Length: 294
Image (cartoon, rainbow, N blue to C red; front, side, top):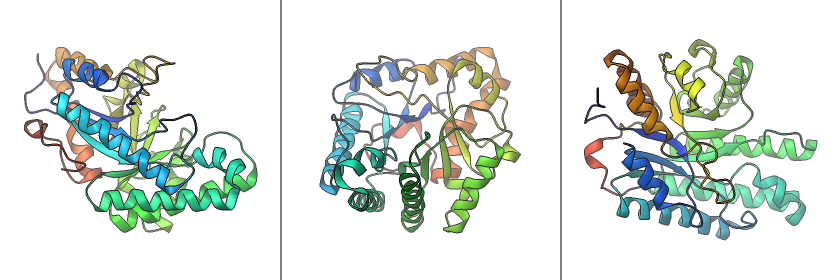
């Protein structure tokens, strides 16, 4: 059985690099049946940006990659921008903690403006480093995460979270944080979710599950909402990391081959969860209309 013509095939979180496969990776995605990408910005040079102006250059580079993909293929690209949470760890020794925080806060405000202007659909990745660090850096990271949620609340967009893998208590703690700043929990996305937690234990947060083979088999039985991602890094030093960009359309084709009942499960990550989180549904017939948002 083939995939329905009207069903989008969406990778919710990936990265593309001007020094990696870039458009060629998007062509692989399209050839395998993919239609829409959520493209998250990333560090393109040796060091993270050290000023708001440099972050603007990074966001512009992401936008240029997205436009290149849309011009060369039929894939629609949604931009997701924010300073990477781990950047603070690198910037603090170079700039001092106070100045590093000021730069990150300015970059978060810039990301909010991109959303307000329709150039991006979400703030991401925001959150916290998922490894041990000194307490001052941990406290500053938590304060910047809170500020990111405040900015996302102000501009009315989702927040895509980078953090440690969460259990039920972790989901609840993050939902409590969102609630304290007035951020709608159903628009909070746990990026790179590697463990399946029952929907009733996710505190309203939407996991974006890694499309690994074993985890995909489990989450396709989940009533949602949930999203699906490869977190493709497009790093020439690590070809195919984390998962290749063609993974999700190939998984979708395998689901289609298994029968119509399983096929309905694909509407959760490709349509209903995106509509719930982002407020729109990717449409197959509008793929060639380039835009940061629908």
